[in-house]
Length: 510
Image 1 (spheres, one colour):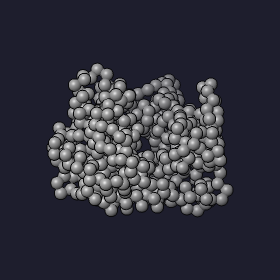
Image 2 (tube, rainbow, N blue to C red):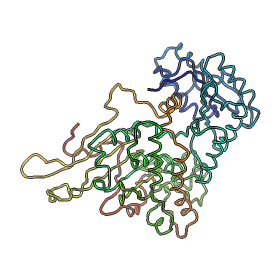
Image 3 (tube, rainbow, N blue to C red):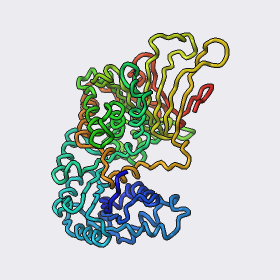
Image 4 (cartoon, one colour):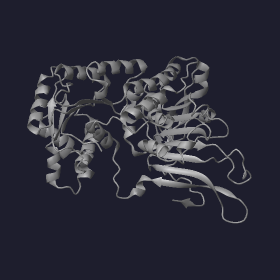
């Protein structure tokens, strides 16, 4: 493991929800696990007028997001963490003179011996990224002569290919690419990382990971909730921008990529970029019409409760054509995946909250037991990302008794089976990686642009194409009925339940 050196974490937008809800709980867990360096402080920076004490009370001492974590902990322990937090008011505009901030950083560095190592975490709107980077540069806070400097930026990283390139150029004016960490919390999930381990450390999978043995790949991201209080933001984004372009494209890249030379950040990220660049970009309207579906959830009754339709949500245009459901079929133009269809869908107001990858293997070329009850049930490798994180392999076995009756059963592993083993939450892992200078799970500029290059034509078609449909689906169902039209052959979407083992059959083998 990389060493976590003495350092300071400077959080811009520190009075916002992300800091209290995600970043501080992650720091709390790291501190409890003794993973933070000996000399470590957090400087919150925002436009709110707060003292150090008020900031400590807000995000540590009186935080509702730490209530469960603090149960049973001593007051000395909690106070020792709170004492690492400081606050600097930047005033009403993030574009003000930063000399006062630079002085505060210098004073804290000298007092707490953080060795001039700084992470600048931008929990702000993307429109402020370049503004903040420029002001930090003006104060030479990007200079690495005395210690390393890193800047972490949140999604959304761009609204289109053009805006993503503009954001990249803006940051790269003031920070080197090696200093820029574009965070995607999905890559912090253990099961997403386990895609790499499952593939490249097991000879029972990697030799079969190609067009000769795999019929198709299916990825589902479903959320049971609607847009809630985010209607105003969501109506300018939609499912394709909000989930597909970043989170799901990251998963796609890990499935598609070739084996890296080694497990270094450079080699893994190189292969991910090559994977995204190999996706067949759909540009003509006929192809886009056949291979993409968008829809919105409609008012319905779920468990006896009436829920609003998307256009009735607060902040949403009553005539909105923004999708809450997106399903895409696409291909990969390389030897490994030639002619293997990928099906990816993401949606809100589904029957359950779940994200999983399903690898469908081809049936044996010669069906010895074609008359058995297995029928067309293919072998499946199911990688569950959330909830009930784990892996399940479905295959056929003989039912005890006379003859050769075959039924489907499974081998399964769940992270919950690890008992006392602590599985890091996504922001814990990603923050620790940034502290240690490991960029493996962070997106590089060319990776972000390659993802947008694939998505942009779809967005443009949906917004400007002729005869583009926006379908409806009742809240609480698995999307519009015509979504199955994307699938080839006799296959249907796998509609999972919250439990990974949703159909155990007649026996379970572990």
